[in-house]
Length: 114
Image 1 (cartoon, rainbow, N blue to C red):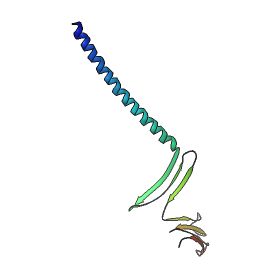
Image 2 (image 1 turned 45 degrees about the vertical axis):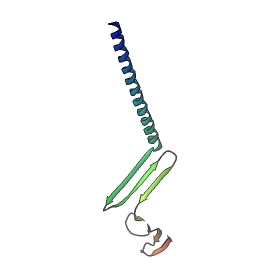
Image 3 (image 1 turned 180 degrees about the vertical axis):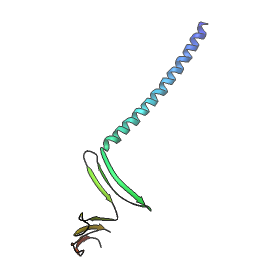
C-alpha cells in the first residue's frame, strides 16, 4: 500500500512540475509581450490627426512627437493659406510648386517644378 501511495505521489509531483514549467513559459512570454508593448508606447508620446476619405482620395493632417522629435504632416493635393475673409493675397502649393498671389488674384511668384 505504501508503495502504491508513493508511486501516486511521484506521478502527481511530476505532473505538478510539468504544469509549473508550462505556466512559467507562459508567464515569460507574457512578460516579453508587455515589455515590448511598453517600449512601443514609450516611443510615441503623443499623436493627433484628422483624416478624411472620399472615393479613395485621402486628405488630412497628423501631428506627433516622441519627446525628442516632432512632426506636422499635411496630406493634400492643394494646400492654400488664405485670409480669414476669404479674399486678398494668398499662398498656394500643388504639383510640386509654391505660388504667391497678389490681392487682385494675379500671380506674383512661383517656386518649384512647373
